[in-house]
Figure (cartoon, one colour):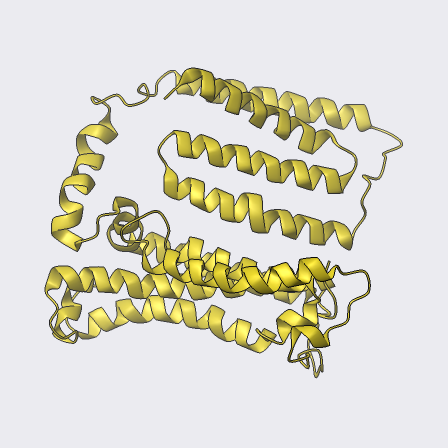
Length: 341
């Protein structure tokens, strides 16, 4: 690690964090928050956590910023001023931040130094994963093997949490009953939107296929390089959100209807849990992929674990993609699904 580079990144992150909570223009605050996420992406990359940086770039600097912009569209661009007690609330917030920051700084003194080979993690946990990942799973990317195999239960419940979050947004903002909003034009060119630039729309038509192809590459290649189901799902969702922003929400719904969103979100969780249930039916433990070699032709128990991880990553991709699109549609249109940003 280069401390001068770290100092610049941390200074930029601190400036963006303070600015995002200080700006009264919520649109500007959302953009600055996206810049903060991008700076954090650089920090994770410099620390060697490339998978975390990939996720931060796709979610924090990408989709989350669009969600904030969509929320600002249906709320207010300016923070409503408080007539009384504004200084008191600022004082309470600053005092709480300083107190918690002091506790965290005091606790950090007990942590081992960065890269300390004698730390408990370097002695017990990390060597086991680094040494045994390829012999156990035939997967070069240790992060993927940990998330989808060694820690498969955690990732399954994280996927379930994403699914529940999508249901919560749909329950709060969605409008139920018989609707005709899924009736959308079949072609981009049939969606006349006043004020939209034909240059942006043409660029969208060119970029979206490459984004979706790259998303599938990230999903399938997560065993060997940074990426996986979560990152691939977010990029895939971003391609549909780009259609909604460049054209209109109905143009995107014409390609991915709300009903199919719910199907994909549910199907992803079912694929993940179903893979574990299949392992139980074959006489092994839940999510013990090695037993899948009995039904996968020309596959050893080790390669079966690799194929099992790919199956659950596909499930994660389906759920993440569908939930991200579902959240955007309901936030951007306040549950009406009639227009976007």
